[in-house]
Each structure stands twice: as structure tokens, then as C-alpha cells.
Length: 387
Ligand SMILES: Cc1ncc(COP(=O)(O)O)c(C=O)c1O
Image (cartoon, rainbow, N blue to C red; front, side, top):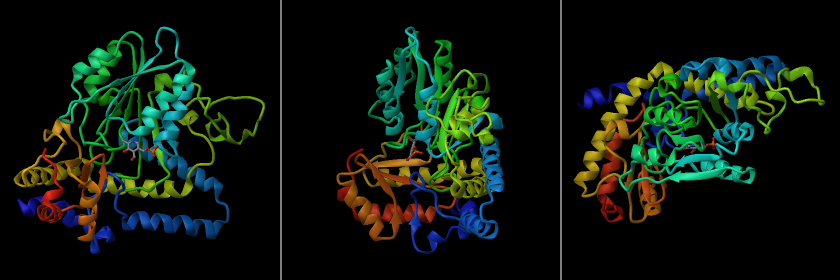
């Protein structure tokens, strides 16, 4: 068991120097820095030094990032906007949707990241109604809850693949099928899934998918993306826009608004060049490591984690079933700040949301990392809440 579970990290862990000093098991917040992402940042600085203002090359890097992202999620390049964050991409999308009298409702799952709820509530100023879909206490949202909320007035359903708060995973395919049967569009926030689970926008059946590269894709802050299904692109005219969203970026015309015919219309100003270098390096590294292999590896680690937490007399709030969870496992605590600090004092990096400890293993984590976490939890049993 220990041999097989550690085969993947055995191959790649040396490329992530943080492990020389810490047990890093917090990829739901940020992936560990790799040698290749560090080298990409060095290359950005070297190119700047060497060429002064290599704008043509930098715009080519933007296009390279678009191609890499499209390949990652099985989209076409002209269906991908390279944005500075999930928030920027989804805001551009929301600004371009027209809500008629007949379809004036957006259905938002209770698993959403704040940005998603906030963006749709901001559209209330434009006449939209927002309906929330509540979750169960067991970290799930049954499909029947979506069946009750999605109706003939629903313009769009906003769902998250894996919840940042409790690690619960939604059945995106089933919800998308239901939404489409009722004439609604579907937006998926895949930030807590991309890089830790293979993502295919075609088999998910979504219309839009937003994510960023900071976490399981091993990139850095400052880069996100928005997929928009080809058939929908030209019918959406974002009013949150900028010159890099224009049909001809270098036309420099201030007299009209002529958005790009592709998903580039969801972009805005000067592209975030440094994180683009990092994103390409991070995504390529994850593809080289293997995302499907990573998913299988993390499932094994998470089984050890769930068992260990149960041996300590509690239960994770994250469901155990593979179809109901992703990489993130959340453990309830009586004082989560004290628990994160206790782990940190022993060199273990985790994070928290609500009153839950977030433990998120990735390709580089070992069974020993999980044992180290469990040892610290055992020594701080009084900080664990009943599951
Ligand atoms: C599920 C999810 N969505 C969105 C975000 C943040 O998106 P943005 O790129 O707008 O900061 C996060 C970040 O923590 C997240 O976990």
C-alpha cells in the first residue's frame, strides 16, 4: 500500500522545494511552487531584460495560454477567454447576458464561492432574481433541490464542481441536463476541481465554465479563464469590456464597440503577462504528471485521511463517495484557527473555512504527509468537533 500510494510523489516531489521545509497539504488555496514555474518567472524577467518591450512575443504567449487551457478542458481555442480571475470572466459574462421578462431568474447553488453569489446578486440591479439552492448538512445538494428551483423563468444555473467550503462535489452532468431540458444555461465554477480531476466541457455538458490556475494547476495568482460554448459566443455582448476584447485589438478605434467574434470578447485590458508564463508552465507540468493519475492518488490518500479522522472519533464533513467529493477534505473543529496554528507550529500547512479545517492533498503529497496531519490532530483531539 505505502509503496503504491507513494509512487507518484516519489517521481515528482523533488520539483517542489517547499517540501524541504514544510508538509504542504493546502492546494485548495494555492498549489506548491515548482521548479518549472519558478523558471517561467525567471524567463519572463529575462525576456523583459533582453528585448525591452517584447509585446508581440507576449501577445503570442497569451495565445499559447489560450491553446493550453483549451486542450486542458477539451474546448476549442476560440471558446476560451483568458482572464485575470474567475470574477473578471464571470462578471464580463453577466454583463453581456440579457434577461427578458420571461427568463429573469438565476439559480445559484449554496456551494458557490462568494464571488459567484455576489456577481449574480449584483444583477438584481438589472432586474434579475436570484434563487439559492440550499445544501444538506451532509455536504451534498440532492438533485431534487435543483429540480424544485429550475423552472421556465430560469435564465441560468450557477453551480460549482467542488465546494471550497466543505469539499462536496455536485453532479454537474445531471444538473446541466435538467437545466437544459428546462431551457436554462449552465455556468460551472471548476476552480476547486481543475488540475485535480480531468475536466471535459463537452461531457460535462455546460455552457460556461470558469476557473483559475492558482490551485491544482500549479500556476500563480492573476490568471483565470472562461469557457463559452461556441454557439453562444456571438449572442453575448459584454458591457464590462476593454481593448483586448475588441475585434481588432490594434485598430485603436474609440468610435465604436465591436467585440471579438470569439470568446476573447470576455477579456478586458492588458493581459496579465507574468502569470501567463507561470500558467503555461504549471498546466504543462500537471499534464506531464498526469491529472487522472493524480485524482486516483489523492483518492487513496483521502481514504487514509477519512479512516484516520474516524479513528479519532469524528467524521469529515466532506462525503467519502468519489462521486460526491474532490481533492479537498474538510474536518469540523471546535476552534479552527487554533487547529490551523497547531498544525503550522509542526510545519504542516493547511487552511480553514467556516469552522472546518481544510486538508487538500495533491500529486506531491505522500501517505506520510497524511500520517503527520493525523498525528497532530491526535495530539489536539480537543480541537476536533463531533462529525
Ligand atoms: C471555487 C472557487 N471559485 C472562485 C475562486 C476565486 O476566484 P477569483 O479568481 O475570482 O479570485 C476560488 C478561490 O479561492 C474558489 O475556490
